Amino acid sequence: MPRILAVANQKGGVGKTTTVVNIATNVAISGHRTLLIDLDPQGNATTGLGVDPKNVESSSYNVLVQQLPISAARVETVVEGLDLVPATLDLAGSEVELVPMFSRELRLRSAISLIANEYDYIFIDCPPSLGLLTVNSLSAATEVIVPLQCEYYALEGLSQLLNNVELVKENLNPELHVSSIVLVMFDARTRLAQQVAEEVREHFGDLVLRTVVPRSVRLSEAPSYGKPVELYDPSSSGALAYRQVTKEVIDRSQIESENISERSP
Image 1: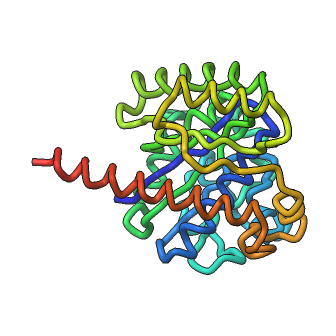
Image 2: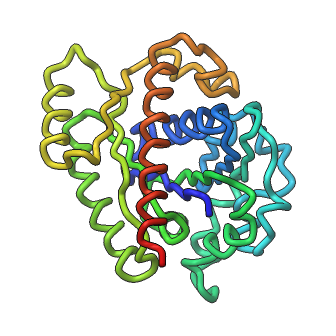
């Protein structure tokens, strides 16, 4: 079975999509069969991987609402070995459409189960809210990666997200857990960033990855060229940081896989 990782943060503008795009890219480049499901109606992961939503015939909307198989909605990206289920603006109305539907919280999980053996890693880019799209993501995933901006208000959003992860775990998905917190948009020049990083590490210990992703002009520029930073400027500080972040994520996944195997009869 693949590792299924939802990248989530209920606060917008915290580098969530940048994180999922660049980790998924590096995982694919390292030789793993990888799928990214864009479940954010803004579709930034889609455009950031060189796919124009206007030219997309099917999307994650069709998968969730119309139960189209993922195999009929996925497309190739600019990264070899990385497939994408793109998002379009249709997804914005799906929250309302899903409300009366049977097993509305588990539709993504059902869709993934049909193609799970085709991939080693499946990433899900969640919208910055806790609606049915995010609940579907958390119900389908085994792990949650939380990108955390090194600013004061980020801590408030983190505690709320962790509470919601626990609710989904108790009611829908007992395997779900937060596997990594990634400190992003780190500005070493400010004392506040240092304080937030220290406080997060103090509270969450080993959950926090060692690598810190700095603020980077190249990271901001890359999506406008339809490329992850690893393809846009592989020598930039942002690319180097996400390479290290990816290595930590892969290492943690391998350790968890070994632990699961040991627990299996």
